Length: 251
Ligand code: BTN
Image 1: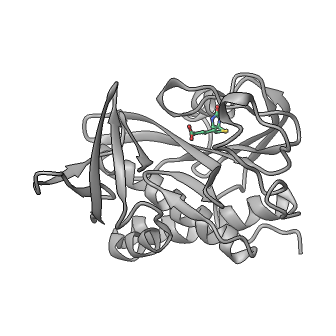
Image 2: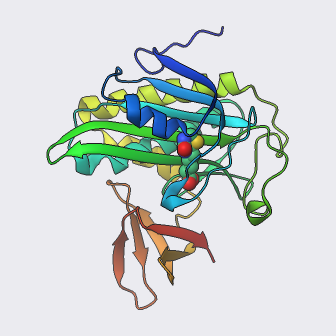
């Protein structure tokens, strides 16, 4: 029952008690290691989040994991892998009885608070992807959070779910592999976007699009086939918002 039923994801696993950051380590070994290699650590001393933030990663409290992928795709397609990861993690948790949402582009939300984040890092040349590191951080057993994020972060334990980290990792790897292989084979993005939209907590809502110190209140009307937000500005104009230097917040 504890076998991992994947074809290539997690066939090679590097496991650490402690490390600076699994993403940093994964990037270091990526060129030498096989596609689908997983780096996982019980603790991170320098866990990194998006937009240069720190990711709190105490020992045994969560899943701190990075996945090395070497897809034969054009570099501009890589943001879609974050969309695939978000949809796969949401599916995995759903399969385990936890009903979560996704806050664009890639925060997994439980009861209105952030449960899990994804940090995608890319090494590419003009027309070729060398590797992608998909970093996943999920709060599982944490009961206390730093003051600054106490009201916006949560863990499975805190919300009353007692799940094993191994079971969650296995489920994530299975879901991710399924969706990833399908994407690589036929670039069937519609199905993944449909799944992603089903979990979206911003679709149809008024949100703030935040860039640097600027925030703009808009209505999120769609998420398109590239995984970008389609928003309606207060003057009625429709605009496409790409992930990256942007974050969104509910009104
Ligand atoms: C976010 O800002 O929401 C992304 C958080 C990503 C955290 C994970 S934990 C495993 C991997 N290693 C890191 O240093 N960061 C990612």
